[in-house]
Amino acid sequence: MSFNIFDIAGSGMTAQRVKMDTIASNIANINTTRQPDGSKGVYVKKDVSFRTIYEDTVNRGYSNFASNSPDAEFDSRTGNMLINANVALNNGVVTGGVRVDEIYEAENGVKTVYDPSHPDADEEGYVDLPNISLVEEMVGMISASRAYEANATVAQNVTTMMQTAMNI
Image (cartoon, rainbow, N blue to C red; front, side, top):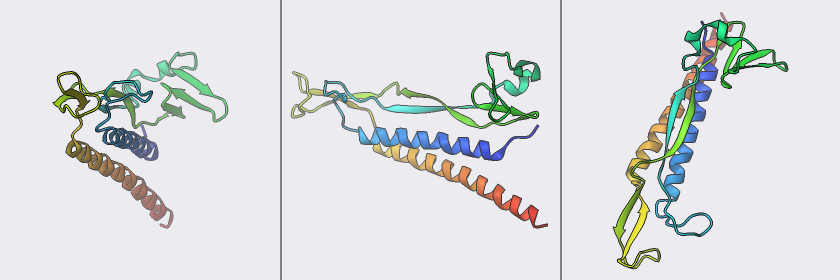
C-alpha cells in the first residue's frame, strides 16, 4: 500500500489553517457581547477537532469500494474512484491524511464578570463575556503554525528527494 505524501501533507496544512482561522476568530471576538445582528448574546469560544481521512476504509477491503456503494463515487472526468468523499482509489492506491472533523463551541465558553459600567451588564452589574484566554489562544496559534510549517517542510523535502533521485 502506498500513501501519497503530498495529499497527506496538504491535508495537514489545510486542517492547521482552519485551526489558525478559528483561533483568530476567537481572538477577534475576545470581548464580544453581541451577535452579528446586534442582539444581545455573547460569542462562545470555538475549538477544532481533526480526524484521519482513511479512518477504517483501509481495513474494510476492496469489496466495499464498488462503484455502487453509497460510500463510493466514480469520477468519469479523472477516472478515479472517490470513497468517503476524501479518499481516492486509483489502481489500488489509497491516499490519506487528516480533515477537520468538527468546529464546536467550547464547554466553558462563557464567563461572568462584575462590570457595572459595561453597556450589556445586567441589573446586578454582571456581564457575560467569552471565556477566551489570549495566552492559551496564542499558544494554540503557535502550535498550529508550527504544525503547518512541519507539513510544508515534509512536502518540500519529498520534492527535493524526488529531484535528487532524478539526477542519479
